[in-house]
Amino acid sequence: MNHNYQELVEQYITAYNKFDVAGMMHNLHNDIYFENVSNGETTVTLQGTEEFRQQAEQAKSFFRSREQKITDLQIDGDTVTVAIDYTGVLNINLPNGMNAGDTMALKGKSTFVFQDNKIIRIKDES
Image 1 (cartoon, one colour):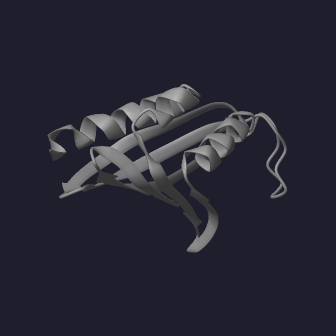
Image 2 (image 1 turned 180 degrees about the vertical axis):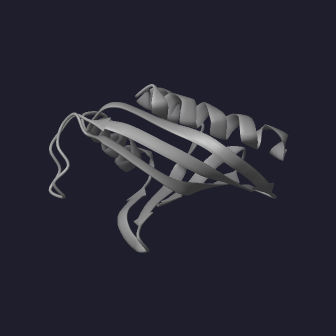
């Protein structure tokens, strides 16, 4: 069944890049668990589609534009791991000194775990 896992991940990332929360939610399992890890520290955890939707809607306002570009993709059973080049133009000032209009760029990886042909876990690491 993993023949379409790559397609589902690509659909999710395309929706993310377009600020399309409904498109991001389309292939998520009801019990989705999301975790963001930055510099080895967990900064966000979300459980369930409602928490995920609320965070995704809020995050839209942080950026004028954003793009996740897949630079590598590996499939291992029910898990897809992608290397990501990320860029985003800020729409707000951040506490770290970055300001609206500044471009944020980083490299990271995202791990997607599937259950019942839906994404049940996403872990973003940068």
